[in-house]
Image 1 (cartoon, rainbow, N blue to C red):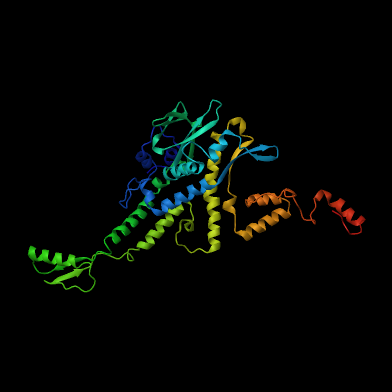
Image 2: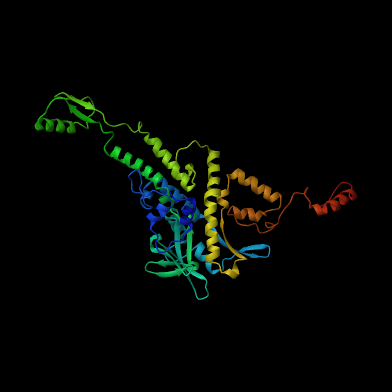
Length: 402
């Protein structure tokens, strides 16, 4: 049994060449054999509906969020839409994909294999001008004089600075780490397919306590097979007896097993069950809370990973103090209409937002005259002016002017 130190060193050791997965799994104490007898790979696991639903939900949600580049100018923040990386991350990373397809490709690869890769091709000034996704199996990581180098099949070698890499925790595949759980889910799914493919439960065997010639057995077998599709009571000649040899799906807890394994897969990917259409004891309010939980605890960490990788690889070092990327996750945190109305009302009354800022959040055109003004309640005043305001109230006979 590997010690904790051995396990951690195996987790954080960079691979030299394409690592031997069986050797690494042995060091981590992972049994490479799936006890359910089902062969589980990153690709075959997608045939499990819950695995596909979880990966699709996370990848498509990340891809649908607005991703922007911002630049700080003193206290002001503006969209840096003139920066060379802006179009790459927001609309056209390469000539074959739009931004949605690009981020969905990288995210689905990370969720399946543990890492999603894209080559960063730069111009003569050092700015990124093209992002090219690369298959996980085409990337071979090597250490060259202490520097990590990515050797890409049919392309060549690129340095770490020229490889955009989105990875899971410890760069390990969730499917490979949890294939016993997924193997059990696939075995239950296969059992259901075989059960209904055979048109129900296998009825059992016919047994006789009398010696029979081959001709007699053939007659009985043919007669039984021809009448197998017919319902009703059957007459068994020659002293035959029917013996049931299987149990029903209910007795095998078939439905409960499938449901539990689906919940296990949701737990692996941190996706609430209601978001992948699993039946659960949820109300409307519970679903809303699960949506917020999904945004905060699943999508937000992935968004932070991507933002930091963009800032490190696509923004040059002298630009980073003022230039940064950010996902707009406001839509994920939006409540219903009544909740949003109450929020906007408080922001308007406290002067935090203007009318035009509220309208922009709701995809409405601005008001030309007065829409950018920040308003406050008349009974609110800055603390450093409270004495002046009090004196004016006294001098005006209790009728303050604003």
